[in-house]
Amino acid sequence: MPAFLHFRHKLTTAAMVILATTLAGIGAGRAEEKGPPIEFWKGHFARDAQAFHDWDKEKEIPAVCSRCHGADKIPEYLKEGKTTPAQHVKNGFACTNCHADMVTYERHKVPKVNFASGISVDTGNNDSNLCMTCHQGRESTASVNKAIAGLPLDTPDAKLNFVHVHYFPAGATRYGTEAKMGYEYEGKKYVGRFDHMPNVTGCTDCHQPHTGEVKIDRCGGCHDKVKTVADLANIRMASKGDFDGNGTEEGIAKEIANLQSQLYVAIQTYAKNVGGKPIAFTKAAYPYWYLDVNGNGRIDAEEVRMDNKYPAYTPRLMQAVYNYSFALRDSGGAYHNGRYILQLLYDSLDSLAASNKAGVDMKGRVRP
Image 1 (spheres, rainbow, N blue to C red):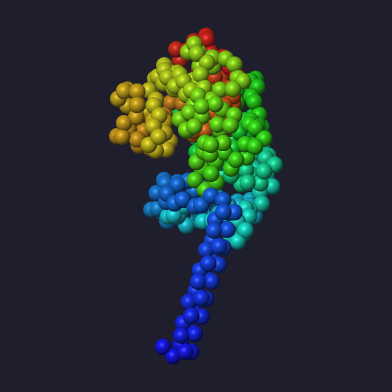
Image 2 (spheres, one colour):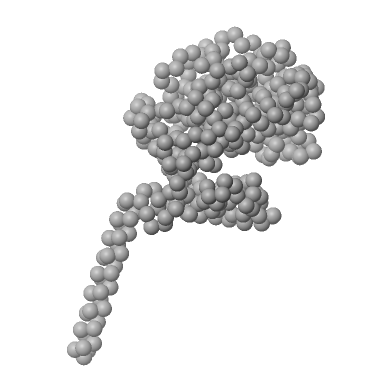
């Protein structure tokens, strides 16, 4: 090889080694300091999730839904206070939906959270404000009261339709009566914000920001024997009382699950006795509460039709199904604000018991 070509070859090889080493160093540094990686098929990037495919046929997400379902609509909402329709999403969110700067990964500035109840709060944590911009629900005490205003409590009305809080209202649960997104019965007192502990007060202190998964390793420091997500159901700290009335003080999540099951049975009994029509719930499709045509206690596939939505709501039933659904939709409600969820469920069950049409005896149960 001629001398100048040999020198050129050595120079090129050296330059490539230096460049590769530099890029590797940069990549390692960025990966180490930028936090959790993106995982497709999970959480905000769950490409096959229904939340990103409800409007595939229409090819457009309506304005009322686009803030939280559009790929990159949060910035528009924060700037304008509203959103316009968006193209349907195939791959989950764009990074710029939450990140204002894709070099530093700084998040958008969110000075406050505007709940659907008309109440605004500042969590004191910008990232939590950002999360709760969507994770708050869409209905509240106010919207249920508006729907049932002036109607007799136990008289079925064909004009009444199910009011759905929507999915994952974690921020609403966390703030309790300070947000008033659960249905709060008149004359009852409810707990406000659940602060947890100083190092786990923000949304991303407990959840991975991209996937939403629980950082289970953070729980074991205070809660003994918590090593898996399944162990969380056993957590119970200072609260006292047999909330579900089964004779045993259990983990808060278990107390909630039992009380919710009792409420479901009471809803079905009340609906049949007062409205004369059996009701049942299914996760299969909106509006979730349908007429149980064959009376088997559940909604079968052939019963999931809009023309079969439950037709005999009373105001009392509306209140109860709203709170049942609220507790169901926040799968982490026991940890976001367990006392608030228990109060909503207890009061709903107590209201149905007061009708003397639900077959409920409140003896043994304790309200937090």
